[in-house]
Every structure is written in C-alpha cells, then in structure tokens.
Amino acid sequence: EIVLTQSPATLSLSPGERATLSCRASQSVSRYLAWYQQKPGQAPRLLIYDASNRATGIPARFSGSGSGTDFTLTISSLEPEDFAVYYCQQRTNLRLSFGGGTKVEIK
Amino acid sequence: QVQLVQSGAEVKKPGASVKVSCKASGYTFISYGISWVRQAPGQGLEWMGWISAYNGNSNYAQNLQGRVTMTTDTSTSTAYMELRSLRSDDTAVYYCARAVAYYQFDYWGQGTLVTVSS
Image (cartoon, rainbow over all chains, first blue to last red; front, top):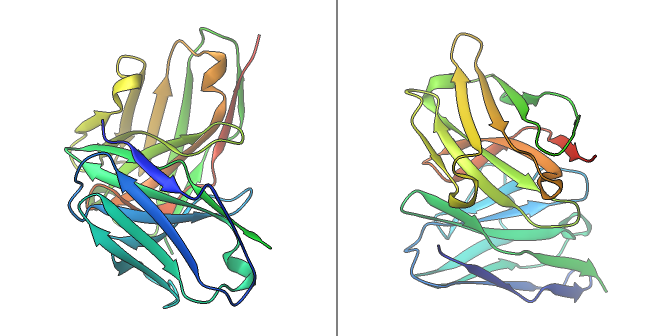
C-alpha cells in the first residue's frame, strides 16, 4: 500500500502570504495525485487533479506541481476562506489512499 | 445541478450492520463511479472503496475486505454502502463521492454519521 506523508502538519500564516504544502509518496504514483480542501463540518472539495490541473471553479491562486513521489500544493496569496485542512490523495493499481493532512491556520 | 444526498445518522451496537444510501441527481448516474470515504472524529480521510454505477464492478480497501459491500440501484440512481460486524472504531462520518477517472472526487454527499456504541 502506498503511504502519503504530508508536511508540515500545521502551517501558521497570515492572509496574503504564500502557502507551500508538501506531499511525499512511499513509491511513485506517476501524476495520479489530487488535492482536496476541507473546512470544519463540510465535505472535502476537489482542488487539483493529475498533480497540476485545477478542478472546475477553483481560483488560479491554487496550483499543484510534481510527479513521481514528490508533490506540492501552492496557494499564492492566502485569502481568509483558504484557512482549512488540505489532503493529498493518490491512485495506484486501483487502490486509493489519502495523506494525513496539513492544517493551514491563521497566524 | 449535481447532488448526492445521503441517508441520516445511525446509532448501532457493536457487531451490528449499517447500510448507508447515497441518492444521485443532476447527472447520468451510470456514467460515473461512486467512492465511499470515511472520517473518524478529529481524524483524516480514509478511502473505503469504489463501485462502477455502469456495471457494478467494485474495489474495496484491503482493511475492509470481507466486511464492506457496495451496491447500486440504477433505477433510482442510488448507491449503497453496507458495513458489517461493526466495532467502536468504525464510528465516523461516511461520505459518498462521484468519481471521475476513478480517483477524482468532484462531488460529495453531505456525510452520514455512524456511531457504534454499546
């Protein structure tokens, strides 16, 4: 089973700052990597799929990069509504898994 | 608009079974798969499995094999997830999600809280 390790666990930033979230896979997942945002009491929301493609309606300040085992989600300038938990997710051989999450909190 | 509406909260005793429903609308049901994801209180997301609404093919997470069954009813555009032999650590919010290209979950249900307690 592929393990996804997200870092840092918590990121404390101010609105307007740049956020850089990391997701590392225990073995290559090619580009089958997605990112989700989850706010308290809500279902997750798809942000990025296939490592770098923004989902429908996702603002351009969200971008994804990487391939193989190392991936990054970047939020170029944090808006108040961006403070949430972010999860990466992979698909390999029809088995899916999520990372443990990174909480982006207001500093 | 695409909607996934799940059944209501459940309280079950250890050893019992639970069946959660997920009614889809706003799109052609058989054109997409449905995945189920759960989230224990204060914890992260756990993928449980996937089912094709087209032909009923399914894949389950290894740790749930033998305890979980996913089905669909195309006549009502509804997906179901049944979990058996419930334990206290099955207490979680259970989500259904529409699956694009197997793993991209672009629409989610509102979640169903399943509480397992004696």
